[in-house]
Image 1: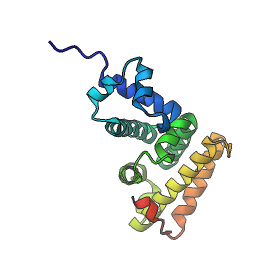
Image 2: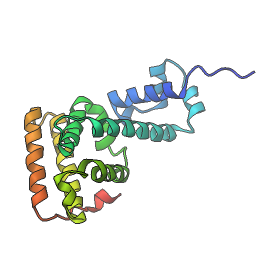
Image 3: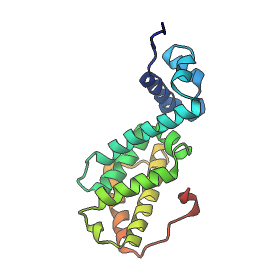
Image 4: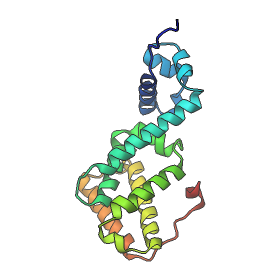
Amino acid sequence: MARKKTITRDQILNAAYEVVAKEGFSRFTARNIAAKMKCSTQPIYLEFKNMDDLKNVLVTEITNNVLTKLLKKEVTGNRLIDLGLNCIEFANKEKQLYKALFLEGEVSVGDIKEYSYEYFVGSVIKGTEYEELSEKRLQSVYMGFWIIVTGLAALTSSSIVDLSREETIELLENSFQIMKKQEPIDLSFKSLQR
């Protein structure tokens, strides 16, 4: 008779999440995850093919959960401002996780770009003053949006810049108004098209 599993897939994913959220992917090892669960590494390798498999599953789950929370939290009523503000606040609240996911290159830029652009056009822009923009201008606003938001997130989460929520909202509003009115800038850098 086979032994009953005492360590579940969810427990492994939760422990792996804790490791990444506190220490980043540099400490993402089977031993560190097993230590978090107070067990051997065997359950990890029974549930996942290898550490890359575990990492891929974990990153997908974290990205989906984070993006869902970031995309749906209403703060000002302006979906574009709310999305930017939520991203910046996530970076400040979950500094190590933000760094691990978005600054250390563990999440594919292409995957985020595809998912976020569909959401951006379908949910954030739809029904707003931006909806009437041409496709080229809309893509320019989208890329400008992410450059501004990730820049502010990186600067504020590393304490280089200290902005209040009101100052952040005002800065985002002013930036987006400028982007909406200016001629589109080609921001399709090679590095963003991975």
